[in-house]
Length: 430
Image 1 (cartoon, one colour):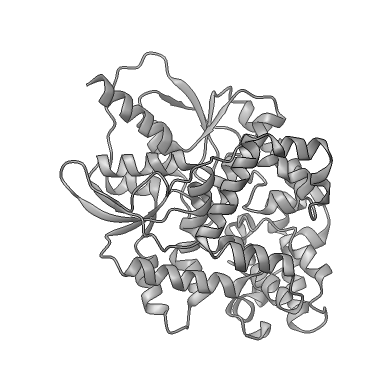
Image 2 (cartoon, rainbow, N blue to C red):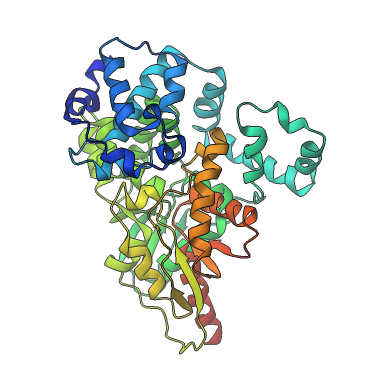
């Protein structure tokens, strides 16, 4: 498709009134302080691309690539411009003119094949267990990795040797009276890096009356592909997942990952598949998608056993951008935490500011990502909390690394894991 005809370009680009509001909220501009890093500057750049003033070269892609796609600018734009969509469309357009063999391998060959991705990640876990990663680092072998990867590989400090899919069956029956049948969109990061979140999710859902189906053939949500200029691949993944999940008779489709639920939500589905033949089926799919904490609080209205806890654990909460900005969900995760008897929720300053993780961003823009992360960690540490909760695997990985950088003895955990721990303790006491 020609860049000029992409919906976000033709409908939104003329809305910008150059007010500069986006600059005041952008975490990247705060660090770089250059108009080429500001959302407003990116709108200008997209306009020049559209008009042929700027050629679609790699240097332009790199400037647009500084954006986290955190959507802070979009939700604060007085003119209602979806700046992140403009940026993503421009990246895709430029990438099509400047393809990369490395990206083709990662995002088309590996990340579209769940089995291949799972095997690769499990091998990484094995390498860590054997101490080969530390050996390679000490010998300087990791320096041959591309871009910021020589520094960023330290972020992935612990890769489980067994994925969630290896531990959880496809069909999980409700305990007691069945209320709903839900499809569980088990995202790549939860599956491969955080299987304890997946197990907690299934345990909580089944305990409170849900049959849980994890479709065997589901694939990545496509969010990493959108961020890296692979829009066509993201469309293909979306179309595949729509077909797979619509083949089941589901009441809801639940995701514990902020990025996944954002990618599968109606707005992003319209961005990717709007106007195509699959549109009606895609909206049928997306209209069932719901964030896990929202489902637990607003639909199931779960109540955990009260234990008359005298000493509670201080927990602070970080808002993932793809949950708070992209979906407007802030209350549900906090309400779930409040319903856990052992938890005392303590708000951090600037809870709804980016941690700098943003999927693959910390791997491709390490130094910039760390500046944003360090500011987030200062705010989190000021609460004196013992645990830091969040609802995004990318944020989890970033924040875990932040605790190491800050020498802070704090567990980074998904709210559903804390809820499940509380539930299991109650069941054991019975």
